[in-house]
Amino acid sequence: MADDFAQQVKQQADIVKIIGEYVRLKKAGAQNYSGLCPFHKEKTPSFSVHATRQFFNCFGCHEHGDVFTFIQKIENVGFSEAVRTVAQKCGIPLPKRDFSSPEEAAEHRQRGKLLDLHEAATVWFEEQLRSAEGALAREYLTGRGLSADGVAKFRIGFAPDNFHALRERLQGMADPVALRLSGLFSWKEQEDGSPGPMYARFRKRIMFPIANETGRVIAFTARTLETGEKAGPKYLNSPETPLYSKSQVLFNLDKARQAIRQADGALLVEGQMDCISVFLAGIPNVIATSGTAFTEAQVRLLRRYAGRVVVNFDPDTAGANAAEKSIALLTEEGFEVRVLTLEGGLDPDRYVRERGAKAYAEALRAAPPYQDYLIERARQMFPSRNPKSKTEALNFLLPHIRRIPSRIARDAFANDAAQALGIDSALVRAELKDAAARRRDSLVPHRHPLTRAEQILLQAFSGPRSSEAYLVAEGAWHQHELEFAAVRSDFREIVECLRARPDGADPLVSISDEEQRRILAEIFLSIHDMDPQPEEVEAAVLAIRCTALEQEQRRLRAAIDQAERASNLDEALRLTRESQDVTRRLRELD
Ligand SMILES: [Zn+2]
Image 1 (cartoon, rainbow, N blue to C red):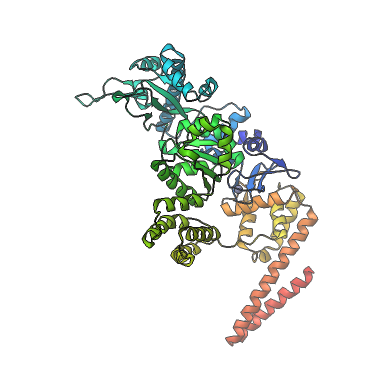
Image 2 (tube, rainbow, N blue to C red; image 1 turned 120 degrees about the horizontal axis):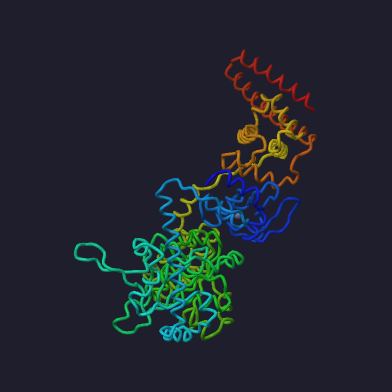
């Protein structure tokens, strides 16, 4: 996409308004807004949006950038897609799309065609549910407690027992290649190896559309209405297509994501029907894995919306195993996980129908932390109290304990486990020692903040060339170049980037180093004036020169010491004269 279009969009877009669609922002200063960071879990706001400079920054997780970066991160899209999204939100007409290659253009056309086919198929399935043939399906849905509203909301449909009707409906929309790619049809291979005629993949089934994050239908899950031998699998999914990859989609994320973000938490269930019932019962932050354990891709997808998850899988063995795998993936990603096990061995769908929405919401609130759930499960799996059984139970828990990033939380879990299993807690801690030692290596180095004076100087260099603050700073930089050479290198590098940029260019864009860009962004947010006063800049220059000279003085004194110890008197004398010169310059500054 052309850069000038991106520039045009950026100028017209209001970052506060656009981020405001995702984050509840409060005014926090003349040009600042703050709110809870959507990229990490927090209880007090450390996420800021700067209205004048049009960027955001999080002091907690250090995510930062402009309006496009925000959309890229939150919607998980590339740069051009982010530009298009922002343009659409602002009502700016999109230019014709440029593609880097004919293949990319063809791929894009194909995706568009597949999305159109899915939309048309969804409409057709909905129509079929209302038809005479759909009576049995309607009866089934009513029996499962679904109202007409619920059916409409989830766009549930019906695929009739007909091999050709859908094909006829979609015929004019796409070529046979696209129809075969859509996953809506099956065919038999012929004797010469070529594909035979297409027929409907889904027949006599209730159709649940699966949407992507933006609500476009990309696949279906279909539940059979047939009983007996002819029925085939109870649930039949779309195959993997260019639109749909099962491991990367979370069912209902399109409807739930806003609520998930607001609650900083999601409720995770197994099946689509569970998800639909719970959602319609008034719990809006529920999503489903579609009958399998969580995948890493799904965890990353969810990470963008929340830091907490309640897992409520079916109470059978398959459900418990899936829950366990999901817990492992989620805790590793730093999620706070609780596990809900419903009374009476009910799944979420039946629980909501039999006990009501209120009882379910209460059970949800009371769901224990996953540690308690796992300890309980270990005791159920290895119930006898002999040493062998205890060891097995401990071995079941240890990988989960080791996975916890925080040492305090790890120790707490280890103690609880030891107590519950009747094992000496020292023994459990010994087993954990290895893991702890491995973690110590990965400590993040401490970062010194810039001084106030350094911050003011950077602020001055970020302004327009003609501003007084900039002129004072630039003059000082020229005049005292040698002294400034002694100040910390990252500060100097930022100054050089700012001075080298074209007049009027965005200061943050001119810095390529991620860490340095973050430092500058934090300064913009902590100092509220756009341009500092010239006197402030002068005072800052003085303070920086002092610090630089004092540092130089310390370096010289150490060098003199060394020269004297080495009996290198000529060198010691030369250094002493230099040191006296520094002392004199320092006195002048005072
Ligand atoms: Zn953050």
